[in-house]
Length: 233
Image: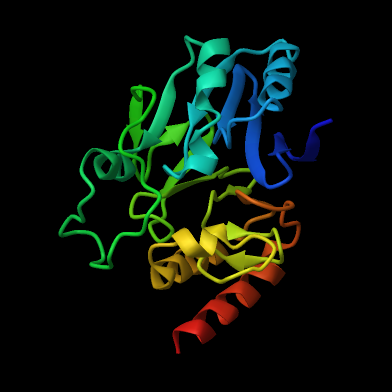
């Protein structure tokens, strides 16, 4: 049985108890945000999409870590005509694991794959849209990380900028219940700046890559910022 939380036009589905993907329902189809890990539970997600009566019109990825990408082959097999969108800067990083002069010059962390199992139909940058979702460039967890914001409903889908598994935190702040995001986090200082930007958007809900939906982000986000800033002192 899938673990599902719903808010606005979004279903957050948790795979293998730890990894979230999102189905965004729009009038002309469904957008899948992230594909999580390789799992038999993916077949249940596919059945859910197929039974919706709507096409899967796009797959969009926040960043290149395996727990956001490894479920992709199953979705590709089930929906071979669905375009896949990938962060532009992250794609450059997969092709050539080097920092650009425009990147903050912080050593790269492990976890960036050597290749992708698919060719993106489009590369996403700040200001682009996927359906009704605005693309935000949010470097910090990785140099090319992106997030998605619904400008009318004002929810955020943030990948690994934040986690709620083990307690709400900016990824880069260790949580014993799920330490992987902190271990792989590239630059905590930039992640803090990203979350400070989130506050200016006055979000209603925040869906993260790991953990329950953040229901009261304007109360919780300042606390995550303060905790992360304390670590940098």
